[in-house]
Amino acid sequence: MVRGGTWLVGMAIWSGCGGDATPTLSGDIAPLFQRNCTTSGCHGGPEAQTGLDLSDGVAWAQLVGVASSEAPSVDRVVPGNADDSYLIHKLEGTAEAVGGSGDIMPPGFGLAQSDIDLVRAWIEAGALDD
Image (tube, rainbow, N blue to C red; front, side):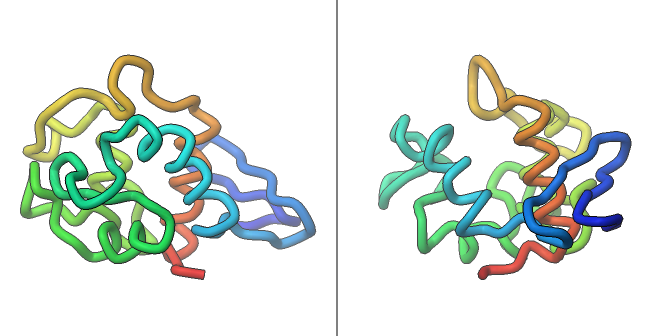
């Protein structure tokens, strides 16, 4: 839900810049992936772990409407529905609750809640490939 440029995601709030701004893949999500997921070598390039390459230019096709390799009955990203998106379960450490496995991502430290809220807002806004 948007109110004056602020995304309400559950109880968390993400304030976009410039009025009714929504999080974008290129402007918000891809840089987050680059900082936390691809530079470590885990989810970047042709040998990405679990077959998930989050590199700029390929992340959307690897995420949206694609079944998770750890829980094939759950898509990695379900546009408009963050709670049913495996990516959110991995970021929040709840993957086992939907039949998945493995640790919270990124391993060892996870993301700041504000970053998870940003990913949630992008998914809730339709997970567009801008």
